Image 1 (spheres, rainbow, N blue to C red):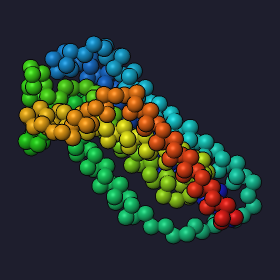
Image 2: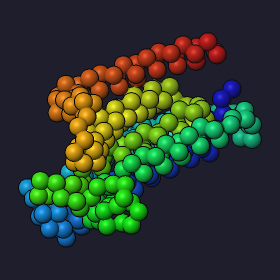
Image 3: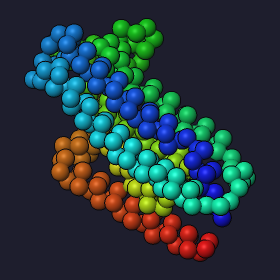
Image 4: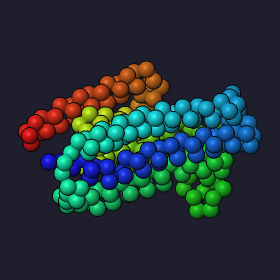
Length: 264
């Protein structure tokens, strides 16, 4: 019998929620500050006020954070109800699960995401990466391109791309074992969410990255034209991405449900 009390001792879901809201709040405050302090030249002559930029940042990340919070807390609430109904010892011993290898891959993945996103990380807090020794040898920042900085200060669609990518990597921990998220529907929704976040991150991250770090060096890429075409056609892109995510949820749920019935 599955021990629901054991499920409640796992805090991966709670820490994931905390991380999502921490990123949301940080992003919102950083946007407000940089668009208040930086000059129009450094910001590419923005047509929105600091408060509008901050609200936009909060919405972009807040929607994701709220969605994840609802799913995670919903699963935990179900676990509480199940735990109250059970009459099994609370010292039930779970099977030994070794996640070291997969967690190492997650750490490496997040490290690589952050490294290639450094121009946007610094821009978000009002710093040109070209002002940072050594990093200025790798990345473009304040270098002029057609009379404006190569990477303007403030938020980019690349900013949300790397933040979504990090959240997607962290969310995969919830699927490692039913001892993190037991409810089949919750796990299916998380799987679909990971696909959506990853899809957004790949297309938006590549478009912004190739544009600001490759094309502005005078290097032409056919691959960029393809990414740009996908990125520019927002309705088609997000419709397809949403469809793939929903298909992932349905497929994951059906397969998981069959496995549950087989075990029973």
